Length: 270
Image (cartoon, rainbow, N blue to C red; front, side):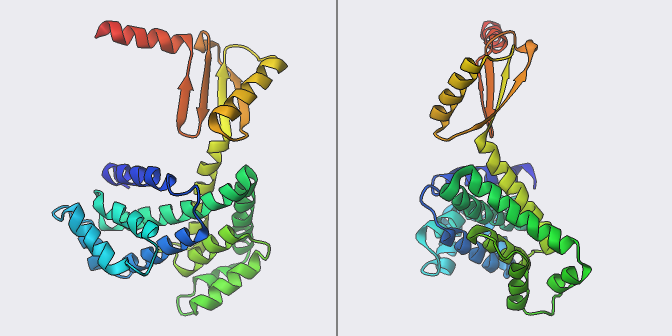
């Protein structure tokens, strides 16, 4: 995905995050349904990614097609995508797929925290292992002539203990792999789960080993700061000179002496 499309996807993910606190799997299902509409209509994809069209015009197209068929929240998410800039008509569909999967993953996380993400990952890996070990299963799930309902039913039988979010993602991968093999798309979903799990891991760099008391205070402070029970990985980095550096997901909190000196030098340099 080119830089322009990547920037639009990043903005869409940030916007989606504000909707996920109370979202259900229905949001994910609706976004996947909207993706089906996009994938079935090349002219629509071109219209929604046409730089000559205004954002208002493209939002109007989305409303005309989807209003009353999906929730207002899902419609707004698709309209936001259409209002952004895309390097190619394919990219908007790829972005919508990521948003839909992210919504399902976030529901698993909201219901059971990091444990929910771990179970989701385990379910998806179980599907990958079972299908990957059988050429017959791969042929059956890849068969373009087979009924979609039959293929999705078979896929879910392979992971009988799959949770609701896992089942949704597996069904989507089998029903609409979008040019990939179902296993390959499930592997992409696993990557999104892993990315979400980074929100629960704090990578901490310090200049020397922490005492038990210091580690306990650090754990409590970070849990309070981020509002969840983080898993903390501590690394010793003498190059920091002093202070502490914390990375949680994409967020970095850097309070080292070296960083403060560097900031001061930049200010002095004007």
